[in-house]
Length: 394
Length: 199
Image 1 (cartoon, each protein chain N blue to C red):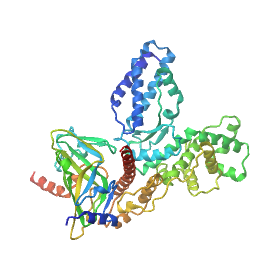
Image 2 (image 1 turned 60 degrees about the vertical axis):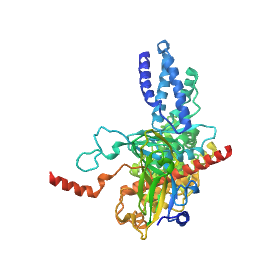
Image 3 (image 1 turned 135 degrees about the vertical axis):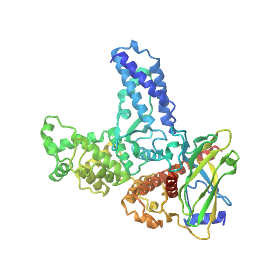
Image 4 (image 1 turned 180 degrees about the horizontal axis):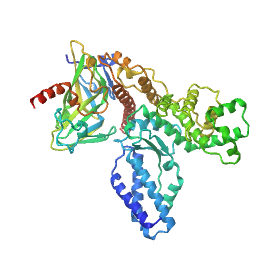
């Protein structure tokens, strides 16, 4: 890479940084990450690029790319752009799957695509980047970023945002290499004919193309389709621990109940089926059992129902729900979906509405009430914590 | 009839009056309930449009929301209220009023003394966070804390119940401030027809 191009790249970064460096983050860890970026920027700025070797130029280029991506996600993670309510819910489930000393920050980037939900593992797991920064500039980033992308116009849509639990599932999968381990085990057992007929049939159900891959397996040229599909199955099950079958509802809608699998995604029918089996504790599926047992062995944590139902759906009374614990927090999404799928005349009747309530009104009501329920839980918890600190210091 | 503390508490314990979250029971005073400043603000900003059109005269008018910028704060963070700036905010608390009780809102005396005024009535049966239209009449900016008890409500009981949902409502279960929907007033449509006849 030419030095001039690196300088161009840095000039672009300087412009972006000028816009972002004054961002305020309520999360101290995001602020700390931003401060590390500030320090890194000063070091980049102080360096004379013209004296660098081609390898060094390339290294700097990777660092600038890293800086840009960090900015992209931090910029969209301010309070004004992403509701802290949804991030809090994801944060609660994240806590259950990582060790306390591990410092990951959930950050979001907003895109204009209506189906633009995705997870990118780069800033969480690309050790090369962090080592490079440490070697070149002696800068360490104690926090890693969990990059989740979502559609800009759905940031306050708590029905659609159940998908974010699935994206978090991808992070957990990559962190522990779960799908990768299952993939090796499954393929070895299947292609070496180590499965009984019933288990073999179950594998063929969830991976209907698998028999066609036998030759590729023997030639050690197995395409990644099975691995990709395992990632999706894992993330679907991971999400359903917290939001039950809600991800199925949204999945059905966005994939139009797709009956055929694609390169990266299994058929919607199979995805819904495996989630339903998991939720019903149906132990008949070899594939599901393999995912469950492998996850337990690898992470020392169980894939299990981790939400607790709120018995009284107060949304019908136009009230936010009172949440007692984190498990109930997740089930708000279930309540929201159930209300949406129910007969809206119930809302009109209970509240003596003399007019027909329409879809837009119900959509706003549900989203507002979910947000306020989460918000009140966070506020109450923060208030109690602040009071305890105040009492201690008195 | 103005409700007293024990009457307000009774309504709450029966579930007829809902205030969530009620962080501190001391918010319920002898004749008022203190409410806290919420997280969300709509701040009036100058736009390329020359004026806010609260009529239906202009056919291609910009929405009123385009004259406001949304901003959020977390509990304990602060928000600067500048002199003569209109800021829409909400209470931290979500309320649901009985169908025979309305509330009359004022700033708490400590804030009125700083030059912040509000005066609003919330109708019987209303449910949502209470909308606040804050204006700072002081010559100096005032820094407010999210979660602070900034305003208070007096509760009045009517002799007869009323139905909040006897007609379609512009604001249901509002939890963040919403810009004025004045252009949706049906009367404006009628009055606009009249004006068109003059022309």
